[in-house]
Length: 539
Image (cartoon, rainbow, N blue to C red; front, side, top):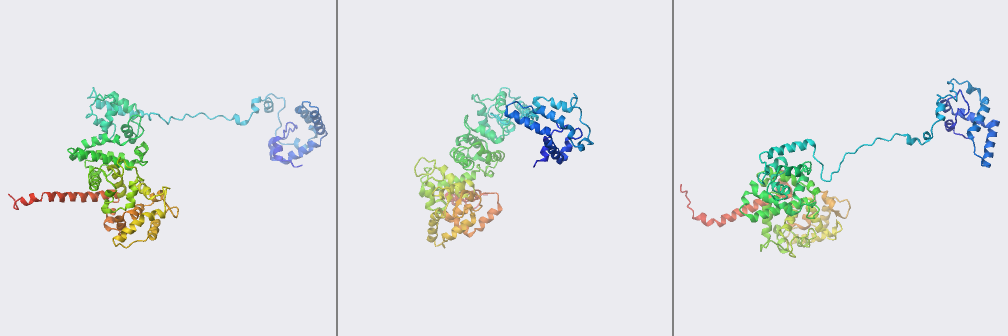
């Protein structure tokens, strides 16, 4: 008979078989003992009568009393056990009927003790999870709150009736740690009743009780600039900030007598902000986009720097001057709109007709101009930023849409050949040795190293540092020639200022050129006065 000795040792009740000299440990350590015992028990006559009795009871549907039959069987067969079990050296078992016996206690156990052992495991204590979401922002820490209130009390101690707008700037800069040119916007945000005065309690209610104190700088500026009930920033939300900057910044003082150029400067700064920050192209800057960009750092820098041209991100006047003058040069009738014939002249006719057609088909970006076939100053600002810095991600996205004729998200060799054909024709017209498209295609794939063999995706372009050259090869002849000849002047510029972008270097060169042309023009206009002056000094 094939019986698992270990399982029998676990199931077999040595008390039921009246083994006073055998412990359960001995049965588990010697499983063959259980086999011998079971074989002997089956050979007893009493076992046969017990089995027959149980079968008869089962046939007659009589309730079976196993414990009674087993007890009588154990008493009857107790003397028939082998002597090896009687002479064991283990301690004797306690009497069955003893009240203090562990066996007695086990037999009288309550029904609850027979339940699953899983239920007897103690349940872990509940752990209180601290609150991590706050609908109106995380409240400031107690120490931070007390420190802020102490500073506010100190500022308002001399202004019991409240602070006017010009007096409120110190609160903006020293208590709120915000750029000073945000002061008027913050003042109007708190003074909802337009009383012209902000009291201590009104400021505490907005800045401390409104949980503005515990926010990061980007969240604070986003909440201050956005309109009530609006979750994003529009271009109009930046206009009050630029107006204050033009009024107070020493680097822009020379523009105070020319309100027209003040307005153009503010518009250009806003266009540049949305070009780089609003990556979704919706015209609405979200909090996430504001945090991902570098606008906050530029605002802090312009608040500390007196020379506005040293803040090359967004606020440089020289950069505005370059953008505006290049647009003015193309706008022949000065109606502040340019068409295809105007744009084809850009960069000394550097662009091809096919790429200009794609721009005016508004594939890369919808024009804000309401005149059909015309590009506004804002549209031109986006174009020149994309054209002169093809290493930036906004530029790669702009030109990728132009080259992707089918709009399937990939650039194929056929699409590249469509644009390069005009480049090839132009090289032949200027007696320049043409470069075959097959050679150009191999060069392009070697530079980009796309994941798939016969197409280039936007991600492939963003992963390569030479992506900008691809577009120059396809539609900008002047830059293509400069790339082929490896202009040493440009290479030296890049090595001298590695932190500057392609746009920064272009704006620097163009501003020098434009300023020199203006100086020459001034000299030519005043030449008559120069010749009228005496050659010798009156002194």
